[in-house]
Image 1 (cartoon, one colour):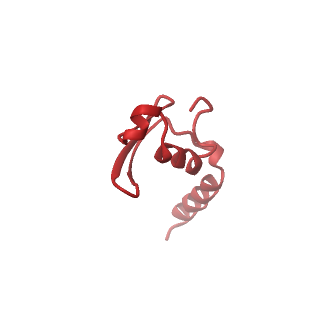
Image 2 (cartoon, rainbow, N blue to C red):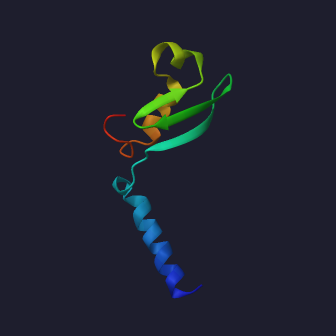
Length: 78
């Protein structure tokens, strides 16, 4: 492995530990729930999930789980 690649690997490890460097703005996740699989989307500070609970409440266990996983990596208005 060349020295350039070694430097990039070291930088990637550093960046991975400094989560404040990253902020998600849009993504789609396939979420396997207990009863079904759902597509969860995040865009422009707003969540959307295909599950029935989200349709009536605007929040669900799938979006809340992702908020926990991505803590500190979403804009504060999420």
